[in-house]
Length: 196
Image 1 (cartoon, rainbow, N blue to C red):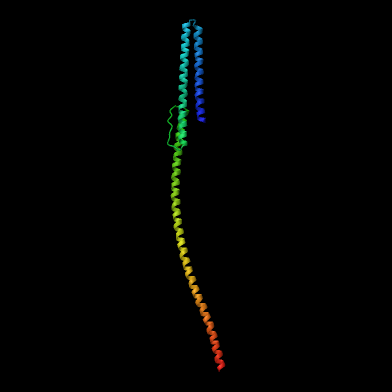
Image 2: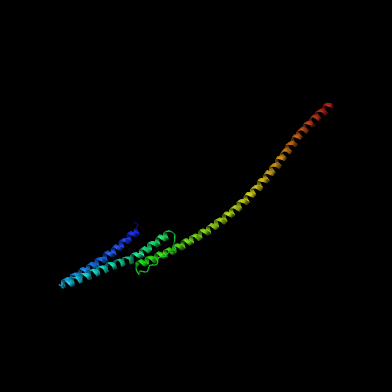
């Protein structure tokens, strides 16, 4: 059994017990007084009837008062369960004019503030999500631009390397040609010198 049910039972028991004790005390007082002063049996039966009526009325009043206290507590319990499920729009309407009514009003105010705080939090979350989405888009665009720049630079470097390789082949080929020509000139000089 949960705490609220235990509290409800305790409240009903305390109210009923106190009212029953008051009624019994009144009955004993009335019956004792009636029997002491009355020696007539008819009057004694009338006194016992009055005592039984007062006792019954006391029981009815006790249960009425117990329900008057317990009913608002049950409404507050229901509100707590609803709010616990996330229904912060649920409100408790209790008009007892005592601390229980103050408690219900406080619970309603707390739920209202909590609902507002959750709405503000949701709004901030949405704004943050929009900012993150915009920043992510900016970063993607920047990344795409940087990748394009890198592709262009890579292409330029590759073309320059190819040019350098062609130049190198030409330079090496020219150098080899020069070496061959120098050797041929040397042979021709040596052949011309041996003829002279």
